[in-house]
Image (cartoon, rainbow, N blue to C red):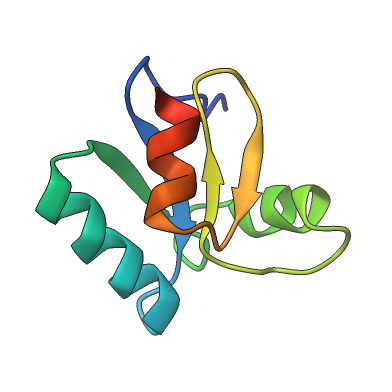
Length: 84
């Protein structure tokens, strides 16, 4: 499955209990950046994808950008900059 987001948006891999994920979602909502949230505990194969991106760790939030690059626990400033 391809999780690469459309231009100007991100895909965020998260869990329901992740405080860093909740903070980033709140910040994204506040500034109007669109995102698709994928819960790695509910969507088959995504925990493994996050592990591959993060050197064997299931670290969330892991964000995918339209250019195919990723970031682990990025700040709002980093997300904004990389979408510009």
